[in-house]
Length: 289
Image (cartoon, rainbow, N blue to C red):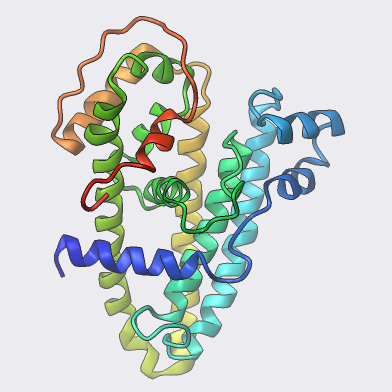
């Protein structure tokens, strides 16, 4: 399978997974439920109105809640993947195995929950699973979870104050075409190829139902836990107040290696808005993202 085929396979899985029941996370309800034992109602309401970072909720609290969520979701994934394995893996779509779709369903839930914990705004304001902005943001989170090169650096570039200030001086279209879209495309290709490899590797166990369920659940537990922690650390670093211009330069160099583009910026502070890159990328009419 080549990169284009891998990307197409991933896009199909993402499209189907986003339509599964329970995949969307209600941001306000989630923050109320998960933070109520740690901070005041006033803080929670402020976090819902703006975000957890502006509400000045301690990062140690966010980290504790994030670890709890990863543990809970990981256990759920292993259990449901076991039953998908017993079904032979093809109950939900002829081309995408059921346990693969379930895996993405839970990964997407973890991605949303961790993103909301670490300050991202509501993805579902328009309640539209087909929104390009929503899809690209979720793909970026999945990229961090799968450890795809450039995903963490891109998260920091759209999240940290210094990065948003410095990158504001770049023409927006340059930032989108030279950084954001190439990274999104690479993530889709990488995950698509990994899906094929992992599905093929695990497929041989499905002929023996009980063995298939045990292996499927075990592999899912191990991989989802590490994926959740990768995203947690990436999001944690994206709100790090100690993030410096030197860190930004290192992230820029990392992205230059990943994208093959030269990113030329002059480092001096200017004011910025937070979501410009994703907003603009959502209306880009570029082939293959």
